[in-house]
Image (tube, rainbow, N blue to C red; front, side):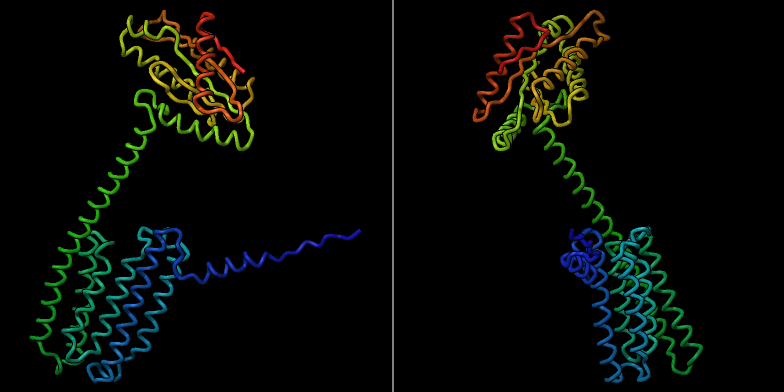
Length: 383
């Protein structure tokens, strides 16, 4: 007898999928993580442009010739690689700021400060890099945190100016230092104002979008649900009935339909008022929802009539479910009329392959009238 040797090797397709996942810079799922990774890649792209500009500046003597741009940007890209891995792996989602916005902005601010130390005549123009970094946080940070980042930026630039004043006082021009500081402070104030406004506007748009989603969900529920009982309405039931008939025809599976009518319901409305009648209808709907299977399709057909569709069920099981429901409904008591005992009549019939929804419904309706003619509070069947 030949022995079957089990192989520990995974199918090639699984290995390829795993390798493709590992080397995909921005996976599609989950979408929130993909957005964070796109922002991260955008930041790295901006740093690459800044590096190119720094190299050109050194060659044109706009930067100090000893500018260690290779070391500075190597450290920067290493830090951003760590940020990328934290976001890509999902570890950053355990933190309060999954995008690591504040850490990324702080890194950019420190880098800009270091680069400014090696600038010459371009320092005023290079201050704009601070504003690029601040732009990175406009959509992610509220006004309070934007103020904190602006304060951190001003602190770093002030520390740079103090350091240069102490180290090379003969090269420092006081009016330039104060002018650059004031310009930076004023523009940072503008960023705080505009950033807070944009952030608040974004929150309002997000709230409006959520309200629209809620309204859409409510409208969708109204389209398929009955307001009083919360059950599916007649229109939705008829749509589902067509679907279930197609499945039963195609798969040759059993399908049973029952039409239920609450006995003497008009007397409840006449004697106790429509509010009490609504209570009886709601009570029946609640009991039926709890009693029937989740796969059974229960709907309010109109007035005091309800329908139940039993897919993949036998006649005995369908009849037993209706009898159980009839017994539970008959045991109900009502505060508005302790003496009231509610019952229902039901007609049950099986689906015959090839027949239409109208034919099936008519036979169930015929069975219901038979139950009523035999004294109500019972279930009648038609083959």
